[in-house]
Length: 111
Image 1 (cartoon, rainbow, N blue to C red):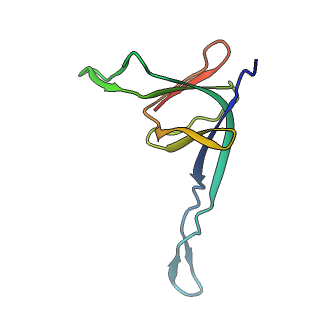
Image 2 (tube, rainbow, N blue to C red; image 1 turned 120 degrees about the vertical axis):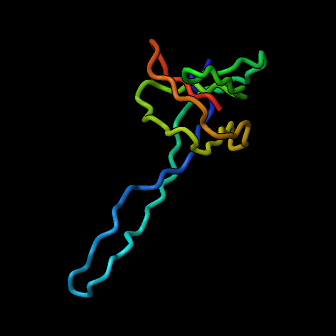
Image 3 (tube, rainbow, N blue to C red; image 1 turned 90 degrees about the vertical axis):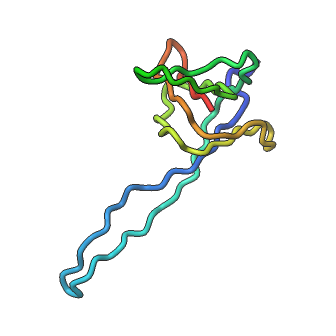
């Protein structure tokens, strides 16, 4: 049995700041580098229609998928568009609604 049979795929943009060119007296817009990230994962559907409760107002959000990733996975910002692949075929996609820190053996992402 494979622990992480799926691949989580998302892109990140580097945070390069614009800079001022004193020779031309102009602001230069820094190029943004977009990198595609791929991380091994395991995905399960939210077949119970569980919800995420946020904030003091108790706002509830229904999520569609739970993705389990290794503990060394970098934090993925909320709102990031991701896809999950299995043998090159897309099995799930959506926007990150919650990124949960390390449990004993994995981190969880909810779409």
